[in-house]
Length: 108
Image 1 (tube, rainbow, N blue to C red):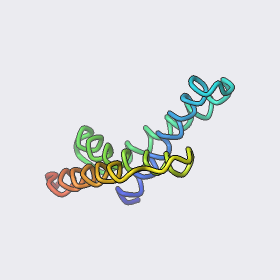
Image 2 (image 1 turned 120 degrees about the horizontal axis):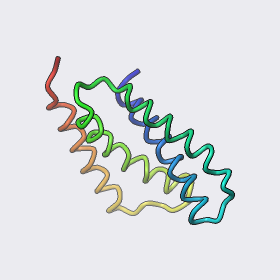
Image 3 (image 1 turned 45 degrees about the vertical axis):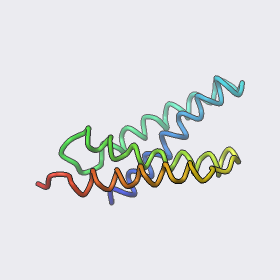
Image 4 (image 1 turned 180 degrees about the vertical axis):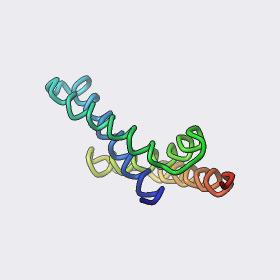
């Protein structure tokens, strides 16, 4: 599996898990929402651990930028709130940072 695929999959799992808690806590949904939320967060951690990288911190740092973009996609696709231009500019800056982290990472 490629790093990009793992990051995107991890982001969707994390956002879905966090959203389940948000729905229970802030939207007055049933506590049953917590069950898939916990499962999703466990899946997130497992998928992120599959990323081929020598250092966990570098993996997590690079993942952060992907998470930001995925969060904006979630905002638009699931919550129905269209991100504004500055959201996308910020996300682009984060992806530039992700690229610098991954390209500059020591090999081997």
